[in-house]
Length: 69
Image: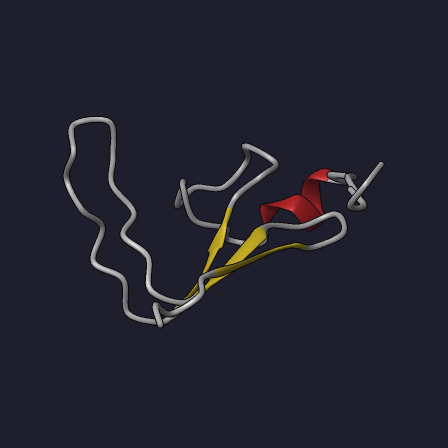
């Protein structure tokens, strides 16, 4: 059975991606991931995009999606 990758949407924060994943840029270059869990920016304010650096807190980013809504 293949490993499941889980993506969790955090209220007012990033997408947390847990499991085996490859993140590539627009040219197909792979990012060197140091962990099985990565946080992907949703607010657009991170200096380390596509990864979250906590900027959402300073920017007042608000988003709280719920499944089925």
